[in-house]
Image 1 (tube, rainbow over the protein chains, first blue to last red):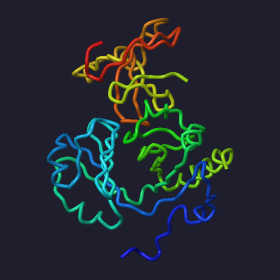
Image 2 (cartoon, chains in turn orange, yellow; image 1 turned 120 degrees about the vertical axis):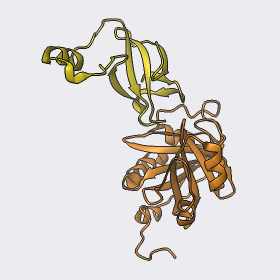
Image 3 (tube, chains in turn orange, green; image 1 turned 180 degrees about the vertical axis):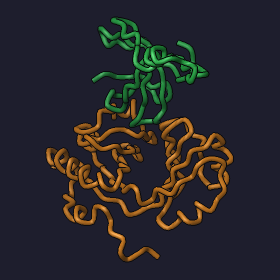
Length: 179
Length: 88
């Protein structure tokens, strides 16, 4: 059971969503997030039930679970809310840390999602340079984020919860041009 | 903005990186035997060339790894980058 005292970091912002065909920003529900560092990806992946064989900066999504390879030996594992306790019980050679409550997720979608993101992200977000399935840690304005292109016009932003209102309000500014 | 090729992640904008000083500075195996002058030389003195320079960078807002980079300090042109711990 979720703690009733738990407050979504964007609870007061999500109500301000402007529906739009051009670009839409949404606060995603809480999720399980694990930070994994290991030299033996195959064994850790098999034990945890994730596919960790992707190249660096690529995500492997399987149903509600996803593994984002952020560094040569580093993954961000995403799973539905409430699975952290079970996953943390798995013995893994390396370091496995529950960071579920550290970040929150924002989804930005629509034909102008790239343009709205590009106001604050210096990465090349062209489909050729940042294809579907690519993910990376990067800088959004003054906040560090993990950016994952889940579909051609859909991006998931993982941001530390104290930076979430900042990122949300920046996106609010950059999206306004297309609303 | 400079585009810096991380040896792990590929070309990335410079705001994802932190500069980390001159590369290939060899630390002595027995620093306790150095006198003050030799220690100061080791800690504070760098080659500071005008031109081709081997330096360490960290892709701190990316993969998080350190790597080495050959950069021209006059033109800022990056000749190449290579993983930390490998020879230039």
